Image 1 (cartoon, rainbow, N blue to C red):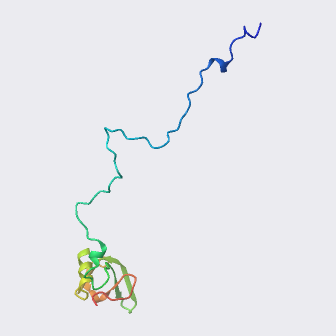
Image 2: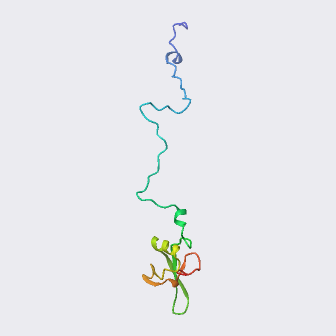
Image 3: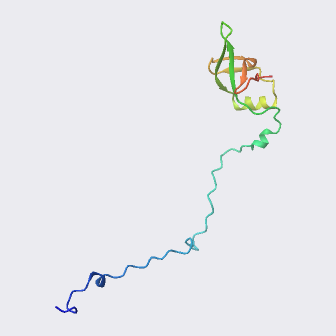
Length: 128
């Protein structure tokens, strides 16, 4: 058998693979489709003032966490878990300190004089 009569090799019979080209940039948008910018975050149905606007007029910093400090029969100091004041109460106190006279302790489930509470993380008495 002569080399001319031999069957073709696999490299000779298979077509060459298509050349892979990498585009030089992002695909261009078609003219029928307008370009879209970044998505905007959802806007809540109500408008909130910025922290700077809310801070105007505050006589004290806005705080809403208080701790009920009470004494047991032997005079030992007991601290209840943190009570979170309603937002309008905390806002009112920040604007007009000393006006709050009663606070409901969520642990005791009773209302007490504000002087029995301290601000969470400190020793300043509420209502002073």
